[in-house]
Image (cartoon, rainbow, N blue to C red; front, side):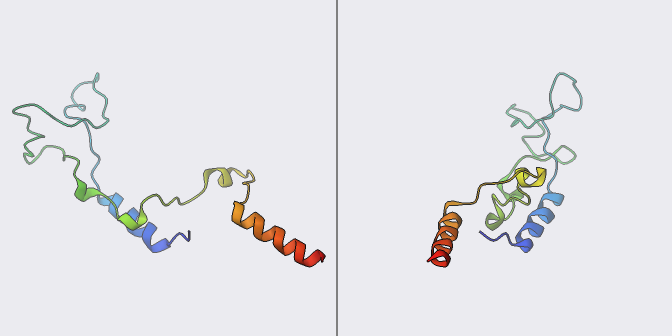
Length: 102
């Protein structure tokens, strides 16, 4: 699969405009971690989407579907380790070697 640089750029652009979703009142209490939890209270201002309160997670903040699961860099390759070639590539190389030897 060829990684399209335009797709990666659009994904990056969308992620820059995406707000940081935080747990309700995690900024107020040290015992609450900032990782996302859906607000479920009856009169919860965050659940009611009152202005001036952090945003809720919604499907509209998702990046482009075509750019999903694309990786910018292979982490093993970045460290300098050798990666085994894919099966298709090895069979192709073997067939080329056999043709040259005969």
